[in-house]
Image (cartoon, rainbow, N blue to C red):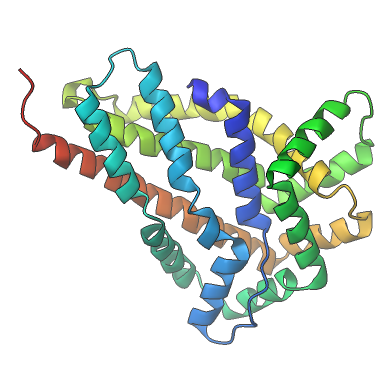
Length: 288
């Protein structure tokens, strides 16, 4: 699990989850159900962020294969690489996300969420989040994190960002994304092993519980530091307004629906990955 302890991977996950749950675009105000769903997908950044997921999972797979003492044959690794690309196809994932939003659709809440996200403050927060996701922003975040030892932030400001994390659920959803990526990678790896060598469902649950325990604290800290950096120039009053939105029924509906849709899409991708690897390996000639 060295990959999950990687600081770079942690930062990437926090940035991805924060964008998914907080980002706001500027679509035209939607009236129909389909138009509102399309707008929410754009507003949440899901249409762009799912493009990053295959690369993140591929990174996990490659790191896992590199640390695997059994060393799978090159042919098997090639099969897994091809299956990964097909299983986590962004178009398929977006269809799954849209289906979930459609199942959970609430016209009034969707309209209120879009109104907030397209408002002046919502757009400003988005600009700050986008800036924080650039290479320059990542460098700035690292420098900011290092400076906290000599110039600590006031406790009141830290608690404000803790409340924002509680309201948005960014850390919680990031942990779930870590577990979803682990599931996806393991489905492919287990499909390449004989059935008798695969871990049981109970063993998998134990491993995931250990991962969750290990990453939850560091991810929480990274989320808070990221918030402190991204929103360092946003007033207390405006941050309170943002928290109020995410604590509202519309805000809770928006964040839970989009995040749950993403988790379902990733779960479906993991299932496709495992099936594809298993099917492809069945048709490969036996090694002598």
